[in-house]
Image (tube, rainbow, N blue to C red):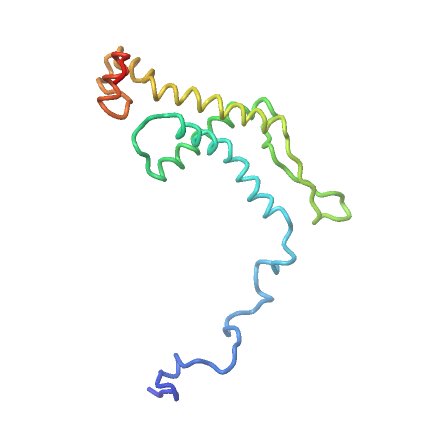
Length: 176
């Protein structure tokens, strides 16, 4: 095997010139150059963030208000996604099954120039719903309402509270 002046095999020796690999042909690329890409890719990312935002806000409020076992990061993300799903399932029928963020071309002469619009009424309902659901869900966790119904039906004997001490002080209503 031949070696270069640096002592490396020729295949690993640094090249004196920088050139693209021989297999790279820009004319065969399936993607247009980055500067010619249309705007919706950026708006789609903003739309995804806006779609998930109410669920994550709801999960954050629940984390703040509820006393419960420590959750992993994955558990928190899944909970936030479930809150988002729940919120959209109940609000989309009232707003024509459209998302609160959209875009459209300004005119037919400039199809790559977009106008962004926000349905503020839909966004306000999502915000109010996320706060309301977070408060109700936090109260359920703190007061063990769902589990008390299941205990009454003799489905389980467990509680949803963090520790047995939370059970004891909640049942007696006393303070230390």
